[in-house]
Length: 228
Image (cartoon, rainbow, N blue to C red; front, top):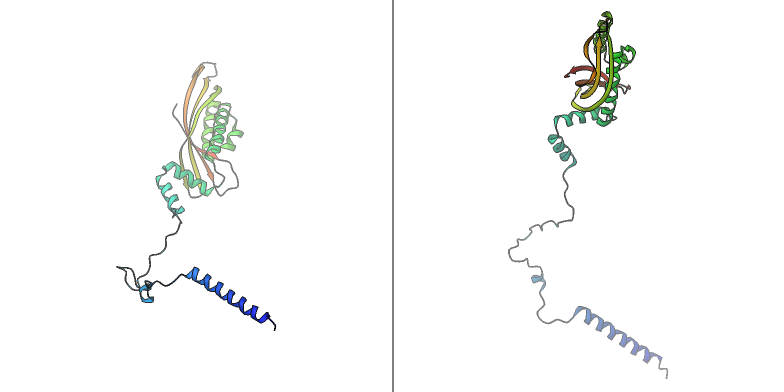
């Protein structure tokens, strides 16, 4: 008698028992206190049918709008800062510190050229109306045969005192405080202006202008005011 079918039945029975035991372990037994399907679907006390569940909160932190930050910053900025920003928006290459460095150099060059009657130097740095005013002063001095001795000692300070956009034209006003030696003499050699031995402190307010649409990066002096 072949015993193999008998052992197959035993193996199948053992396998079925093992599966039943695993289901029992995972699902557990009924205790008589299980919630019915109706109870499982019952809403918590105080809840209303069909009420939408509150949206789940996420971890995203809302940041202020960049535009709002920019507006707030602009609102709190000084008129000077807003004006310089306006120039920067019209001329991406504009930088206030670089502009001040250029204006310092221009100031020393212009006052020295004026004292020496160097018209070619002045013409390149001055607006037409300012050049004409400087030229008239030089001609008057030459007509009287007056002589000027001038030494630029130092530029003590230079600060931006104002800024404005007029259409496409940017204007920046700078206050200069310098120390110079200046002495003017008549044809006979008599001192008529200044002092050849005493340094003078001079404060001047100059305004420079540039068309931001122009490819020429240079600024021109358009007005001067002396407070020496």
